[in-house]
Length: 214
Image (cartoon, rainbow, N blue to C red; front, side, top):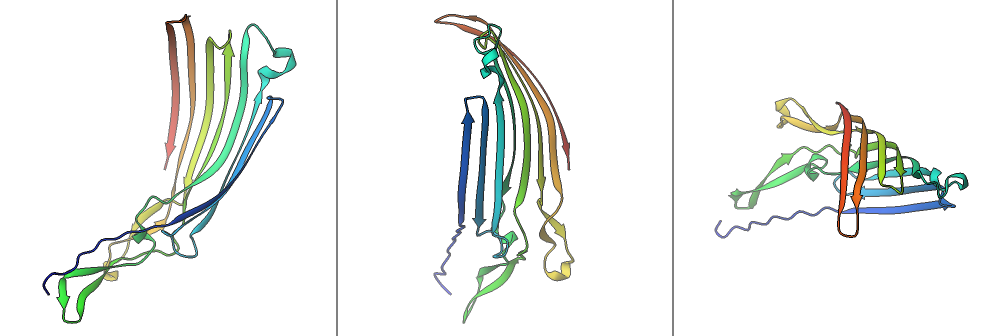
């Protein structure tokens, strides 16, 4: 068959709906929350939709009446947040059985078509839940600032491949399996030792520790 066609095309679709709310009372008590509903064509029709949400709170302690205009303490904020996100960063063929046209095997009735990928229609979103809490402190009109934070990030339903019997025509199959946990603390200290209209010298120090579990 002369002048055979060779066409490559790929299209995926994703849609999301987001709602959020933010509230501040007297610039002391802070709250924000969000909810989103996402869908992706990369999953099977029963697993395309997934909900995600987040919430955060904070207290500006330095804005309490007894601390306003304090000469030493210029900032003291306590904060915490928790939320979830999703991931669809994988080839669509992992969830959808895919066929490939063999353009070099052309017959009188047309090209040959072979099974290229064995998809898992029950494949679902990878989900990551994150907790973050910390405190921000400033002294002497924020010439010296100290930040401390704790975080814990858990990812579940990881998209992975397992080995299957070769008689199926394939050596691997995609499933949701296992998880990853990242937990740690972070500290940072910044001190402005000199500042005028032309120059500013800042000394910074940081300390962090992370533990990763698979």
